[in-house]
Length: 594
Image 1 (cartoon, rainbow, N blue to C red):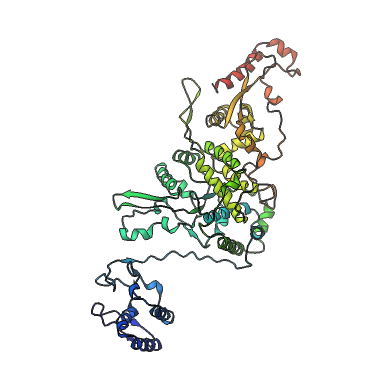
Image 2: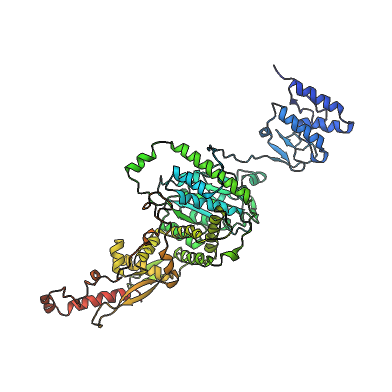
């Protein structure tokens, strides 16, 4: 049966506005209309076609209109496409005269916020981090540390005086469970998911969008005080060099948390200024050296966490595909993470938690040391070998001052404390600091740092050649880079036991960084049920038994051996040449560091 059309509007200005009502509601509305005072009838007739203007609104009329909306089967909030900026009235279509019933011409198009609706399994309310860890470990035993780190980033949003925008990008090979970790946070309150992302989306200057509509397109105001999740950032890091520079320059400004202002010939000046803080979680495959170099020149605001190889065997893969389906595991973990974060932000509202830094006076110096090391090892440096002199030459290194790195690592430590229901730091909060520090620098420099740690911070050219499997030229080049960046000092040792040969040069890590090599990224067995898997970047530094850093096997070039390793006949036939060979080797290494 077709419902009757009832025209309640007799205004000459809006003669064609009609609304379809069912019969019972139509009678109820007519009865209500007839009972109203004369000065209210005109407004009520208009309000059936147009939502009430604020200046005429009363408690009685508001309740009546809301009840009408609930009972009218044809009412749909999404059908309204325009809203009056003066009184809030909404319209399904733009009136012919482009004016609101209140007389205002400020009708703007309505843009609905995107909905991120992901399935999750509801279970018991998760109040503590230990409860959450138990659920994650049960389903995905090798990725708890990464999940905990992402939770720490989320928790920083509760800080009232949040300085900068915390960011953490998981780095690993394809199918390395990066997206699995991030999927636990899909659909959470205060999160914003973007599968395809470009930095220009923060403040748009699109030519095919009108200036009035651009503010509804801009990403920056929509992610304010939320966590932006970008599961695939590899396309961003694989862009051409010119585009990379443009992207990172824009990210550098946005991640300061003070807004972004842009100018273009299409829309002129557009942007936002003020407190525009947000957290950022992302994932990417390993980053090329050229990208690190560009980020180092512009000023790096991005921080990373390496996802290590799981070293799984066939039995591990068999176990993965037995029992509960992958999707069900993700839903259970997503529900647990949602419950934990909901509880967390009930206790600590967004941007409301006061943090007293005075209580961190004993641990903050450790964070500063890691930040100083990170700032130096992320420095941009061009090094080449002179064809004329055969020596290494370099440009002036671009090394960012430590304060921003200190702030970023300090934020992560605070976040870790917050998810553990604390507003002060403990030594266990430094674990995420170490992990992010050793993950947020070029891979070759990390490997060299590991080698320095293995040998108690001392290395000769030949040790580097043997252990890294590289040429002497590459070894000398790497040693020079660490020297120029201010990580190591060049020292020497006497290899000629007669005291007549030239000493051999070696490098030794500076005293201020020696203690940092003793720490691991993660404690064995704390992250993984399989203790030897998923070790951190510096995991090889534990339980090292230092050896003499100049080994007997490295003295082969020296003919002055105590144990008579070279036979008497060889010494008689060539008494001088061998000695010169040993001295020459020492001289070659020494001259490279002049």
